[in-house]
Length: 390
Image (spheres, one colour):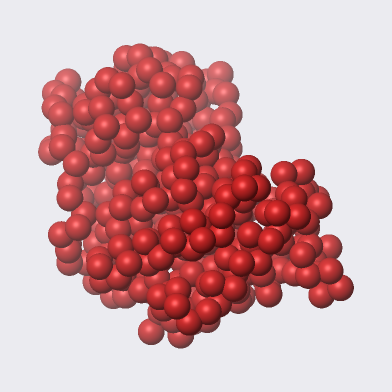
């Protein structure tokens, strides 16, 4: 990052309407993202410090704030970017202010997203950045991403300019952040990993960026490709119905895939496993119909759609014979010639126990017989054919 002093927050504040992402913006590509959902406990007069990990770099950067599920406008002041020093600490010599329409404060209307001004800043690929913000007024129930798979931090009062946070508390979620974009004219575009807990990284080691989309990003960089990888997986998310994992994949597809800047590919992954696991009466044809709808919507938007088979779950707490039958039927459809998918990522083949094909390979099992561990995440990333992105 370039060095610079972060100025104090200006008193001005204005509402910002969402920037439409369907219109192409030359050179702008997402480098990090999360899917968002409704939370419960909000914030008031608190500083948040949250760490994100880039997939590609660029010469400019933008921050996306989301109040998608807020019941009232969200006031944010003193937003800044800096290099982390560990825990809640930042290197203050690298701190840079993020502005919205030229202001250091922004009010995001309920149900909307705000995109910051472009900040001229050299951002590296495969690096951590800390995004700090001060929330001066009661936020109400927050817009959040439940599984950050790393520690983020909150502390009382405005501590935006401080190297550390006094009396901070750690949190395992992201709040009010939905994405980070970079300007990179050499980038080929972005691929969105769209799924549930397997995509979200549940089961991989926290704080190590070893979810399968992270490991796919490593492979893409090593191959010489400059492609943003955006992980909008949400734990417990379902394909067809809303639930504890937020709005269904059908409902959130535009927001979490099509509206992402620079998206050219999507990998539709593991949501149907939760439809089957939570309701074993779910019909396979309903799931395949839902997938076909997403494939069509992706193609209508001009993006390549890669479909995943479902990983094994025999032995998991919510599994059943009926759910296993549904999984087999869904996987057969994905592998067949009528799905409309442009390519197939065969997670089932990549992670199964050869001696018991309805179970995860023991060395890939995180312990719950449902979520792959870090080795299993690597097996999934290694199963991706990089030629799909040529």
